[in-house]
Image (tube, rainbow, N blue to C red; front, side):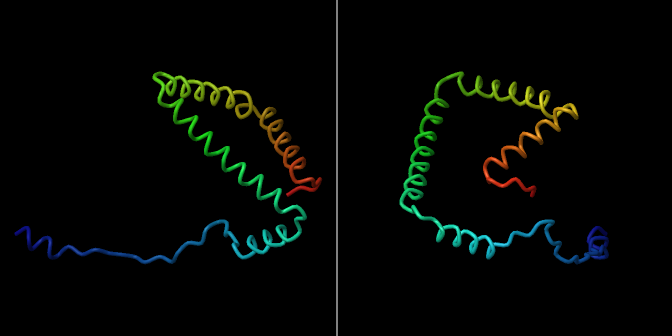
Amino acid sequence: MLQGVAARRSVLARAEGVKKPAYEFDTDNLVSDLKEKWDALEDKPTVITYGAGALVVLWVASGVVSVVNSIPLVPKAMELVGLVYSAWFVYRYLLFKSSREELLADIESLKEKISGDSGTY
């Protein structure tokens, strides 16, 4: 009897088209832009040295974090510090409208300092 019920059951499947993401990343444009900027650099050895130095610093920092992580009670204390800091950040910058506006203004100011442009993006 159960075999008959299972045999009669049908499955309805509906095919949908692939949804496009909200933002498409243009890799060709990125590569050409990076190539232009690399060709425009005058002091390429300095850039390579800074990049290699950053990788060494990242490697050393990873070692330090793993050593600190092996000390008893320190990982839990760091988690507590992170939780308290996150709660403070939400209270200070995200909870109230005026502080959110202040945070956005600070971010825009930082973007202008980094990019050197005074235009908006």
